[in-house]
Length: 142
Image 1 (tube, helix red, strand yellow):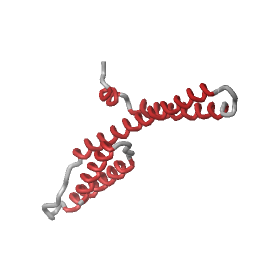
Image 2 (tube, helix red, strand yellow; image 1 turned 135 degrees about the vertical axis):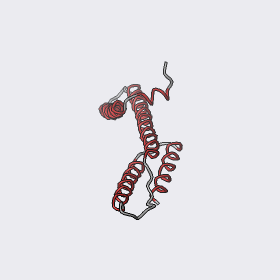
Image 3 (cartoon, rainbow, N blue to C red; image 1 turned 60 degrees about the vertical axis):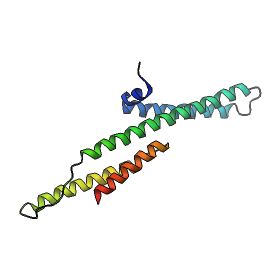
Image 4 (cartoon, rainbow, N blue to C red; image 1 turned 180 degrees about the vertical axis):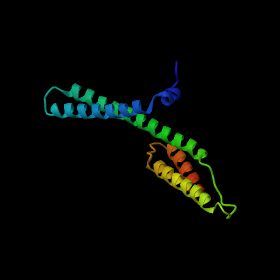
């Protein structure tokens, strides 16, 4: 039996994406059904059930999104450590090679920084992880 955190980590990302899409589809369908019976008499229980269903789907969708965003941030955190640092110590004959390596690393860090900034952070813990990664990347660029 897997606990919730193991389950969140083992589910493939495309399955999470599909789940989010399916939840959005269920929400839209239930909202359409709710609009159909809105003015129909004696549908109080049906309306209540549909509203509860929509709320449940929204909560599940938020959880899937939070899981996806957390996994993206954790992956970015791991990738930050893989970026090798370069410093120009010798301005000898291989000057252009070192400049190319530094430029490539700078471009990689900038791409990663933009990706981390675009990642949503629904809760305080994710937001702090995101800010920490952004600070690390910004320091790497200096």
